Length: 184
Image 1 (cartoon, rainbow, N blue to C red):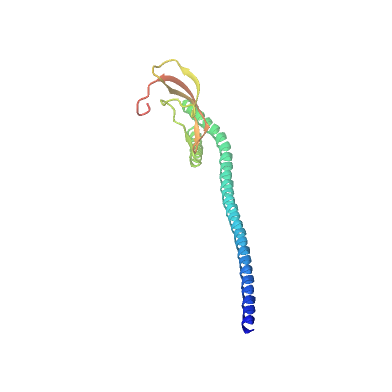
Image 2: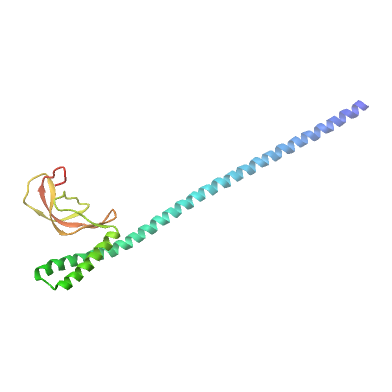
């Protein structure tokens, strides 16, 4: 009977071990499910973090563009003022206006010019250059000239770029001509 008692005890222990193995397998399955859930949350968090970084960059770009467009509107108005100064100088030189008044206007004009340069405004060079519709607006065509290209021969109103954007096209007269390698 001793042997039979040992067999029951061994069988009982084997059953307990089997139950413990089942419980371990069950717990390992639960751990795998929770690890998968954790990985899903981590991936979602990484995607949200990347989206938020992209959002911040986009908002900063839009803010800079808004500021730039606001400046552009003001600068276009200042360009008309600059043109009027230039017209006044050409008239005052002919009329020999008061020297002091002319000097004062020149100082204001130079200050305006410097302000525009600091904001990134540049004049568009056009005389004796090939006509480029991106920078120039042709108001008339000069019938004189031979060649296969359109060359700017006269400028009626200066054009300007703000950084890389044309904010006012040069208003020009165009003639047919030839341009050599140096652009003339």
